[in-house]
Length: 282
Ligand code: SF4
Image 1 (cartoon, helix red, strand yellow):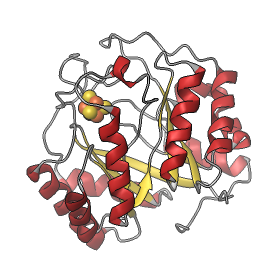
Image 2 (tube, rainbow, N blue to C red):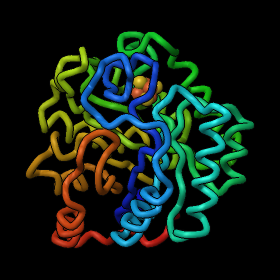
Image 3 (cartoon, rainbow, N blue to C red):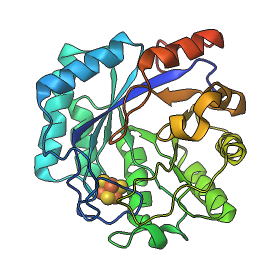
Image 4 (cartoon, helix red, strand yellow):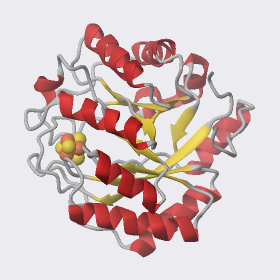
């Protein structure tokens, strides 16, 4: 089932740092006053530039991310406007939306505007979730993923490791994810920001490699296991080894509030490993 080619994805925070929720790992919450860029709506020209850069560097996926608990009428209109514009201007990209909790009607509206997939992560296990967020419930997240499957959009769903969760929590999250049958599973490794209350990520590199492998094993039906945020920090000089453990997708360029490494370094890494970049979505 696993695709052998490496799928590249780029993420674009079309609104940033304005969320009222209290997710303890998230520097975009207004509660923690992290030193990040905060804005309501990114200029369409900047979004177009980022989309073209992503395409020119071989990305197939382009993810439009909003920092909010879920879609509002206003943010839905904005995402749809961008999706329609990008569909015309940069048709090579497969558009993904990542806008928090969403109902079926909202998802169908996104689909009509040109969005092909929706990313909503479970983040951690149902049992551990109250420790990292008190302003909304894990069940709402699961429900949104079910809505994505109902809508006919492709589901992308994963989580974050290194939030202080136990190994049982990690397995529980992976089993919950498998029950949703996502096409792609982004796994993130917590990148500590000193403004956040959460302790720094306690995982060592071997534990992190083992978690990629475990994700691949449990989500055997998923087309892609993506190593997303925290890759550079967690794996440093050994990033090239993530593919041996089952990863077949990465995020290129910058993350939402942290910088990724220079894209050419990632492309050189794939070349040196004789790994081909996926040219179409399966
Ligand atoms: S809901 Fe999303 S954007 Fe808001 S604090 Fe939680 S993770 Fe961050």
